[in-house]
Length: 111
Image 1: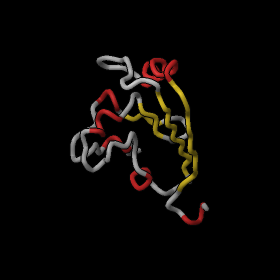
Image 2: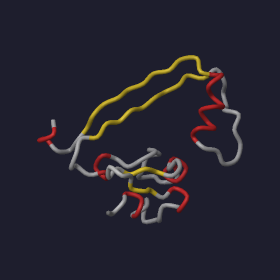
Image 3: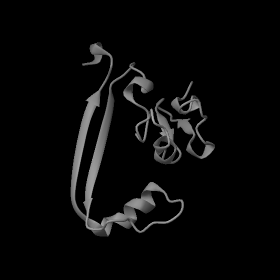
Image 4: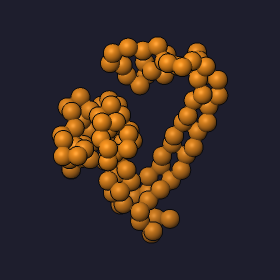
């Protein structure tokens, strides 16, 4: 199975620490957060994962995004940190949250 991370971004290989692994159900699970790698890419637009076009059109995909309003200007984390560590650092400072979920596909037969 060819994984999205095999091709990298802008011809660069995705760093091994961000390598995608296939899960039992055929999805792709990322070992860590791809945001730092993609943030350097002008074509990836800072997105933390593959665009639907890159992910394929064989099935419908469910996505969810969350936005937090914080009462601080800078999150108190330094150096390398995980998503869980970031979440723990911002939790006491969350003033409001908004989420958006949806299903998308490039395959009309799945609509």
